Image (cartoon, rainbow, N blue to C red; front, side):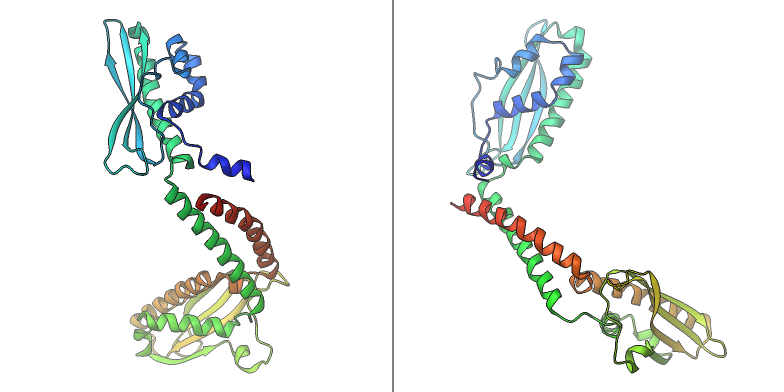
Length: 317
């Protein structure tokens, strides 16, 4: 672990960055350019005379431009533009190399493509390499990772200890959100009744939701003799033990109205119930996660946490 940690703060100079980028794309210019001058560039033949700056900030970009040096010699000038060092406050334009090519007119198209590729790959390398990040940002991201892993462990353990939501609990939470967000007002004007799943009201053994692989579906329809009903039910797997996919009654909303406005209101109410039920479950996903999955989450987070803490201590130290 210590060996890997030491690599975190290995900083590059602009010339080392160029060499790394050229090495990534070595196959391209070996195949298409066959230019000895470009091969020599990897050994820093054309970079030794340029100012060497340790790159300790990632707020810069890699850029290239052409320069006609002599009648038959072309230089691809490579620059780093922006904030290169953590202590730097003003952006700079630092030239790190001039890759020179003779008789460039014979391979001009290839050189143009090469310069564009060099710029693109250089910027991707900077973007995806943490060695250019300021120490303060490395510490901050490490702190966030430790906090995130600790949160997963705490929430998963809490979910294992606490009682699971029942259908009736989810109904109450969903209805509260629907009302709080002003999506119940129109229905209240035409309401006949609201009935949660009757088994939840009269049975002592309530249905606990121990799996999140379900949807809430609401269907408005005309009643057999009067009014409009909005039937809502769980559709999917909500029991970690059986792992069966099935439907289960969730709630029924009724109005005595039968016109198009009433049907529209009932449809809108169904949409709101579906939306806010999903929102509540997603915000409280640990309460609906199967026990085996919670235990696995804890194990994985704990195994990563020790390395994350060691990394953070190293960066701070």
